[in-house]
Amino acid sequence: MKPRDAAELVRLPAALTAPGDSLAGAAAAGWPYGGRTWAAPAASVCLYLAGMALNDFADADLDAGERPERPIPSGRVDAFEALGLAAALTGAGLTLSAVAGGKRALRVAIPLTATIWTYDLWAQRTAAGPAVMALARGLDVLLGAGGDPRRAALPALAIAAHTAGVTTLSRGEVHGATRATATAALAATGTAAAATATALAGPRRRPGDRWAVAASLAGYAATVGRAQLAALRTPGDAGTVRAATGTGVRGVAGLQSALLAAAGAPVVAGALTALGGLARIASRKVSPT
Image 1 (tube, rainbow, N blue to C red):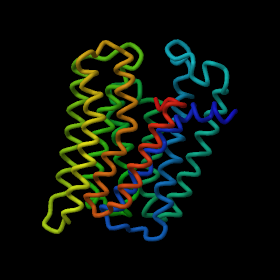
Image 2 (tube, rainbow, N blue to C red):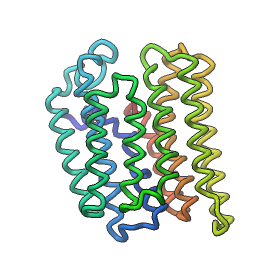
Image 3 (cartoon, one colour):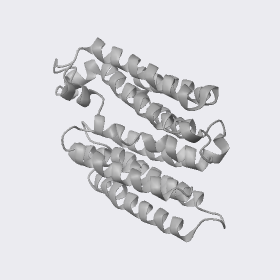
Image 4 (tube, rainbow, N blue to C red):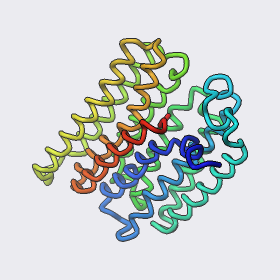
């Protein structure tokens, strides 16, 4: 498997959005893993990449007709190579989860892994697909919370709502969407922004944090919201829907940055914003969808 083909298989630019999930959960819960926090976002990246490789393995027949340029139907990657890579990355993700928080982290990482595999092997082609994918990203947030999901409930809700919207819209990447689908995606984006704003509530929040959250949410609305609004105007245009989906995949970084700023971690929020910019640049070379 050539490096370029592997990067396309796992949608490498999109993986840059994964670390922010567990970091947002960790910040909301007061950094429960201490110095081992680094292992949680590393686990998130491994599990995200595993899910992408497994997705292409499961979709090989469908992609042969709809997206023949993908690595497996084009013959550049063998389907069982993709499955082996997915299994190896899953093992790495679970190992890193154990490094981060031992049994506390594994109590979330194992259900998260089961959810990812369930989505790719079954749910993605059913009506339950967006909900299952949203559950996976919500669990990814809780992975960083160290066994205290209540403190990370709002970040998990925000990321899950965003993911549900993007996944719903993504079903129209090839043949176009419907107005109802595009409306649902836009509503999910609004729900994610509202949940993030709620996470900022509280008398102890610093003015600087509030401004950072406002700036991140404005950027999120200006990118993801605007792209989805374009899809709502012309839902039958598959190219517009595909562009809005890609923007949504990358745009979660703005939401994650807002959540980190709301939790009093503006430096990490700034780093995630930069990572989101890197994902946009990388997406010019390798598609994130």
